[in-house]
Each structure stands twice: as C-alpha cells, then as structure tokens.
Length: 139
View 1 (tube, rainbow, N blue to C red):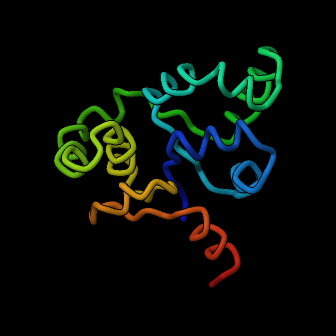
View 2: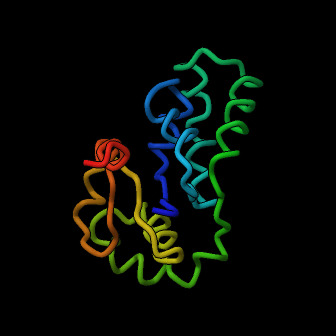
C-alpha cells in the first residue's frame, strides 16, 4: 500500500490523543493523503479539540504542523475532475464525504476511516484502524 486517504475523524483523532492513531500516522511509511477542503472541518472543531486536549492555541498549531509532516494535503483542483463520480458513489450515502472518495479515485488508493457509511459503497476499498493494524501484523 503506497498511499491511503485519511478521513477527518482519523486526522482529528491523531490531534486529540497521543495514542494508536497518532502512532500509526507518524510511524507508518505510507503516503497519507488528506483533501485540502476538509481543513474547514478541523477549523470548525479547533476550539473543541483545544478544550479536549487542554492544549494552548499555539500548542495546537504546533501539533497540527507536526502531524502535517506525515500527510500530503491534496489541493481541491487535483480532485475536481473526480467529484462527479465521487458524488455518484457517495451522494446517496453521505454526501459530505465525496472529497475523500474523489481523492481516492484521483490516486487510485484506499481510504482509512472508522466511519461505517464508507463501508456502504463498494467502489473504493476502505480500511478501518483495526484493518490497518492487521495489515501491519501481516494478518
């Protein structure tokens, strides 16, 4: 697996807690992809993340920048031509996640997400955190 798209909840989980998700994100030698458009979600929840983690705003941004070293932010124009197909795949399931599907289509790669609605589509392979762990262990 050369690249994998991570959804917002995976990225936010790595921001919130120094745990397994953060460790996987920073230790695995995988090209993690994150649609630029989804940074609006992180901005939207920035204050809640700060409250939950008890980080200062400066510490939040330091951690964010540290995690971004391990993630390739994909500009919207790169995935734009895949938006229609992504909408056809995900539009009736969870329209808000079409950017992840479009990114996966653009790079011909799977998605890492623990959100069950991704499992309702059958076009893009989706790995849960448990699947990623099993993959690492060779199971």
